[in-house]
Image 1 (cartoon, helix red, strand yellow):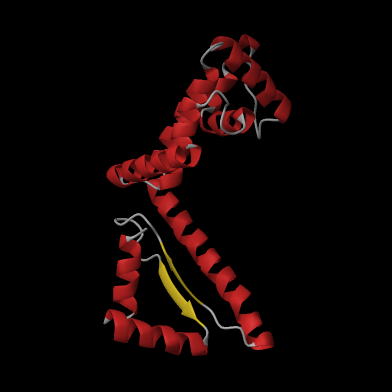
Image 2: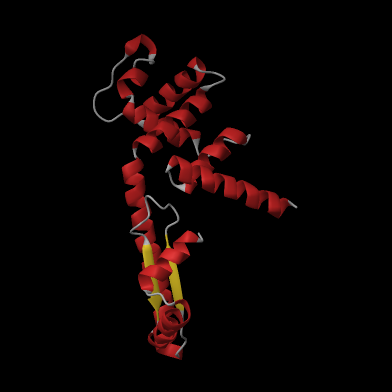
Length: 192
């Protein structure tokens, strides 16, 4: 029963991600932060990023408005963090979480670029995993890899096969499915 419920939640989050045109992991992270009783991620790290972006405002929290020149030391940041928590006693974690969400949405283009880098890294790792087994032991293999966000992941697709597997899969796709690599990838993406 739990697995069915989790599958339904996953499906709803996938639909929401597609509707909002943002990556699934962002929707999932946002959901977890808002509906769990834990604080997703390290609050100190979130505050450190917030501090760096709002340094002047945060340094003004120090007693007597002391200003610091150069790179703020961890002790000063720690003091500012304590004053921030004191100023927003019950809501400081929520403020930092919302700030982080806004930053993620502002950096949507870099998120797409990060997704491309992760895809390329995964593709490279899978290729390097399969090739040695083919060379050393003659194992054959094939896989299809594609991104799931239709409007963002058009370039995220890759088909790999060892030589004999490539002949077999190409023959299968052409003869049985009457489709080439691009069409098969398109069909595959439709089922993700």
